[in-house]
Each structure stands twice: as C-alpha cells, then as structure tokens.
Amino acid sequence: MTASHLDHLAAPRVVAGLGCRRGCTQGELLDLLTLSLTQYGLTVDNLAGLASIDHKHGEAGLLGLAEGLGLELVFFSPEQLSTYQAMAAGNAFTEAVTGSPSVAEPCALALAARMGTSASLLGEKNRSASATCALATFDREPA
Image (cartoon, rainbow, N blue to C red; front, side):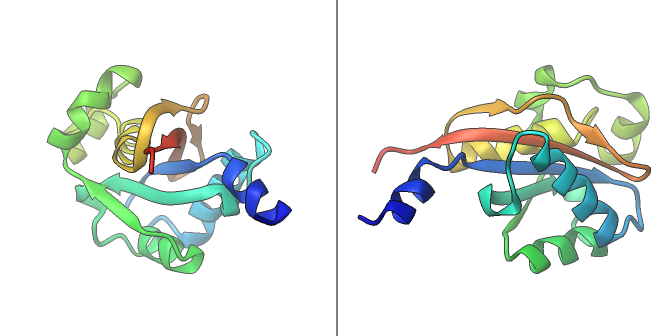
C-alpha cells in the first residue's frame, strides 16, 4: 500500500447531521459544515455522509449540498431518531415542526451507527441563523 492509501485508512470518518429552517441556502449549510469540520482539523474529505430528518426531504439547500459534495444524504424518521435523543437537548418548537425534539445530533449519531461501530458525537452542534450541524465519528465495521 502507498503512504497516501494508508493515510486515507487512518483518516477520521465523520458524518454530519443537519437541521435547517425552510429555505435555508446551500451556501449557509456549506459554511456551517465547513466551520464545524475546521474546529476539529477536518475537511469535507473526511465526510462519509450527511443526514437530516424526513421532514426536510425536499429541502433544496440540503439536496444541493449533498450533490455538490458528492455525498449521500440519508433521511431519518422521528421514530428512527428516538434512540439517539438522550444525547441531545431537545426543544418543543423543533418537536412540533418535525416530530423530533432535536435533529442535528440524533441524525449524526443514527447515520454513524448505520455506517459503522462506536458512533459518538464530536463535540457540541454548531448553529447559524437558519441551520444546525452536529458531527459524529465512527469506526468501520470489521471486514
């Protein structure tokens, strides 16, 4: 194996859970995602996927972000996220709108758990005017 191939294998694997208000732009989401990654010395090259809640399935900013980054965007139902709610502070407004008390953190954890083992949040979520972003790390399943 080449050194660059080994570096890629050792690179942290991270997913992002994203929540946003209706009409949030792709640019705002990308800026928030980049800021979140930069805090941990990571780049979009470390990202293995993006996640949000079913309620945001048609949100143009999220869809554009995933397409622009060439990453899969996975949507989870509030029921699928319930297992991961204890790790995040919820809020009544978010729950009234989406059916889930929080979005970014449980989405990140749910996707990380789907992609590997030992899913864990990487710090606190970040916020912009119209979006939230939480990062989760995971270990790959054994081959």
